[in-house]
Image (cartoon, rainbow, N blue to C red; front, side):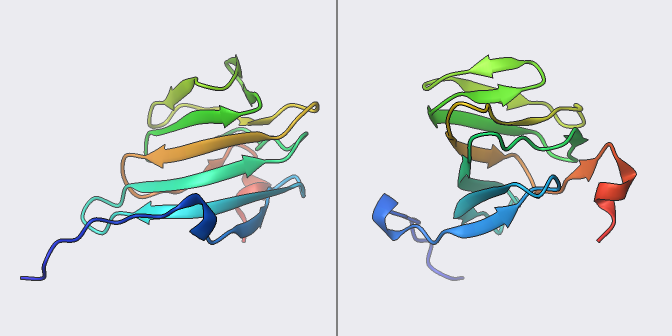
Amino acid sequence: MAEKKIHVVHKDERKWENEVSKLGKPMKCAPLINDEDTGMLVKYAVYFAGTVTPEHTHHCAHGMYVVSGTLHTSFGDYGPGSFVWFPEGIVAYHGAGDAEDAECVFITNKPFDIIYENPEFNEE
């Protein structure tokens, strides 16, 4: 059996990936861990001001811990220090309002997927 080791990512060692939302607005993410045993994902996400995902759902629950800025969601706006948990299957949108970027630690409870309410967005 392979030896178990801890996994550490320092903020200065994050590997940033640029993403473009289905609305054509950019955001960036830095993967922190994708657990091989459970499929759980943790990443650091930056939604640039004005970037909000279209309404969507997931086959996983997911949460966001707001580090800075305001997380704008279909259920309200949440500032730094807030943890927002979205149950599996709930329809929602989230991102940053127009005034400032929102930085969050994004966590899923199992493998990540996304299904947009607008079927056109689900086409590759």
